[in-house]
Length: 307
Image (cartoon, rainbow, N blue to C red):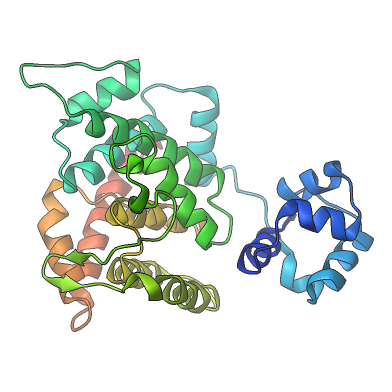
C-alpha cells in the first residue's frame, strides 16, 4: 500500500492556503513538505499538526492505495514513456489521441503530420501551410497526456483540471489574450452550438458541486465517467479547449479505476456530439458511442499484448 495526500492539497486549494503558509504555520521543513508533495510517508506528528491547523481528521487528508499493478495499462504506458519506447501503445496513443481530439476542434493537421511532429519533434509541411496554433496545441497535447499519466491515480480536482487546460493552451494566440484566462475558468459567456452553458460567475461553484458528487460515489464505473464528462461539457468551464480537456479527463479517470479507456475518432465523432446533445433525455446514445470507441482501443491493447 502507498500513501497519497491528494485530499490534503485539495483542501488547501479550496481554502486558498499555499504550501508555504502550511509549512510556516506547522513548522515543518521544506524536505517534509516535499515528501507530502511526492506522496512519501511522513510522521504521524506532522499529520496531527496539519489536522490541528486546518481542522480535520487524518482520514480527510490522506488515503492508502494499492501500488500500480505491473500488468495494468497504466503501468505499461508509464514504463514506455519512461524508456522512450518507439512504436508501442504509449506512442500510438499519444498520436491517435492528440490527432483525433484536436481534429474534432478544428485542427487542420493530418494524422500523419501529427505523427511526424511526435516522432521527429519537427514540422513536416506539405503544399498547404500549417496553422501555428494547431502545431502548438498538438505539442501541448502530448504534454497533457504525460501529465495525466503522472497524475492518473490522483483524485480528480479543480487544480488538475485547470493544469490540463494551462498546458493545452500555453503559448497559443488565445493565451496572449488577458480575458481568455488560460489555466483558469472563463470570464466571458460561451455556448456549445446553440446551447447555453454555465455563466462565468457560477462556474466555480458548479465545478465544485460536480467534483464533490463524483468523488462521493462508492466505486466509479465507466457510466459514471461518461456522465461526469457530459456534466463537465454542459458547464463548459473554460473559454476554449473544454472538449479536449474533458476527453483527457475521461482517459485519466479510466486509468485510475482500471477501466479500458477510449479515443473518440472520426468514425465516432458525429455520434459523440449527438450523444452529448441528447444525454439529458437519453443517456444510451453517448454511452453506446463511448463503448464502441472503447472496443476499438481494446483491439489496440490486444495487439500489443499479443492477444
